[in-house]
Image (cartoon, rainbow, N blue to C red; front, top):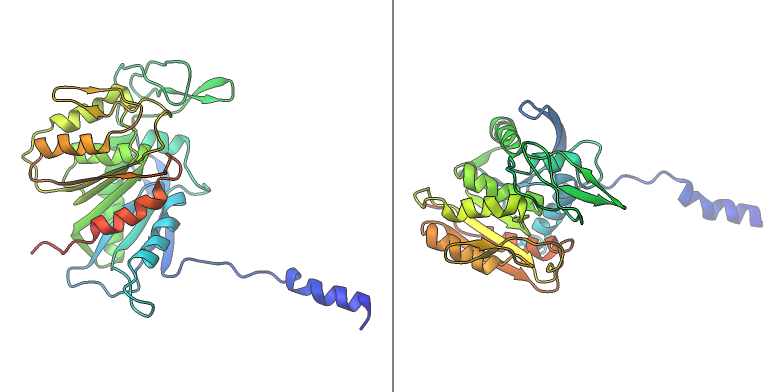
Length: 313
């Protein structure tokens, strides 16, 4: 066989078009948010186990473009009962944005942040910027600060409550009493804001490295001060122990105040919430060796452990 034939034969496997790899049991569609006038990429992963009698419990993952694959793989790996058995029956729903590789930038900045006040604060920027209405704190882009839209959390929660949850319930057999919201960073802020303003929207709220410095820590103050008469809710707050120094998180909780701290005091925040919400189940986790960008890896194991509770009778 000549050298040309050998070269052709060795090159042919590379020349073939490779088959796409997809997440088994997953599908997606685009949904237009009426309240936000924005399109959302909805990705759903059905577990390989049959739905329980009351329907599948549901995990809603914010930043779905980036976090949906991680949630699916972690569920299928960490909740697998045996090599030839099935996983825990959680339906996973990722909420992301069309034509986005990982994070939605301006879209998530607006969707995940509560309405602002006049408190000066920063987003990785050396210049302190005032915020009012829908103007956002500045962020550093090279040598300058750039504005991103903010303050759209209520509109985004309207989309979840009025459109996304009903669309999922229409397509799949789901358990309306077990619905978890999971968010990281700004997503964690949105998760706690939902707990503060719409505690009945979900049964479980999982906030990882939440941006509690937002507007001088006002969402955190409001959450700690919230009356404890709400129905029982389950809350998990997690942070990495290498997050200190990124920016003030305004998350150290004293008896009568919330003040700046170099890192989120997850245990202190959980303790304060337990005191004001005795009917809530509240857990905190600090992930050793994890920074702000890597914390979601260990957080996923904590997520499935936290959610692995028997249904209420």
